[in-house]
Length: 413
Image (tube, rainbow, N blue to C red; front, side, top):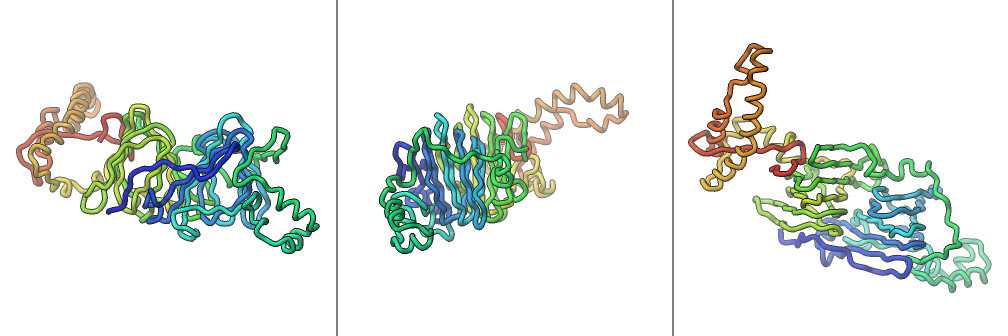
């Protein structure tokens, strides 16, 4: 694969004293165009108001920082006004009109990622504003506006000529905005930081998956999403989307390393990830991440509403599922590399087994009366490990790997 997969930061597109709008360009991140994906961020200062708009793309919105208010009008529906806070995710299908307002001192930052396969520009969002200097009303003649909204000609001319803001404006302190209603959140928003965990590995990581069950609207946009948080030094084990979906990832917090492997076992990305960067994993490619000591958190969209992932390592990994006959055929021809792998594995497995053997062998024999249940001594285990990676067994060194599910804690695989 010749495309540049290097993670990129967003660049400012427009803004003023009310806030700014940032986006990722397909010219700098080619996988956006290749995968028909758009990504952008909205950052609002206190009293910043993002004018009503609709987009040419299905989107998932995720609140990265702050608290605020959002107005959402789904096609052929009434406006719903909801309070939003850090961790909230919302699915925004085609034709959804939205506005965003920040009444707090802390900056409100909202991430948008979505499908641009039907957009005006592949890999980019195009917003259509209802108001402002570039609002749709300014494009119609006075006659059309008068008849469409049943307004007097003088009123129409005044409305059109007095528009001063574009995209984002700053409202005065005395402006009253609609009050959010708690019941309006139902089915529109899900807080990923408070939702039940789909995966929870002690000293490893935690995952919340957005799908048609907990946020039905994602089905209309054909997108799924997840929030992943891994502890310092932990690994998200190698895995891939087995339903041909693309994975678009934004690093919310922390830092770490990522490697992506494509066809023919070729490593197509190896780099450091930092907060604020975006990268895309191509279809069927295998990705793995390791967090720095401060941990790492990321939010991803997947181009299917109910994604299915296959892990290559860990408790549920494909390699573990393969029968022993297949496993015994694995060969590492390089003797130096083979010994390094086995020594690394043995350093983890043998000491743990030795401790288990010393602590429980007598107890198990007394209670069960069958020494055969713990028939291998630690030295026996070492001998078996020494036969790894020769294909069908043979003289060698030692090995092990301890991982759980899709994550491993410090020192994992």
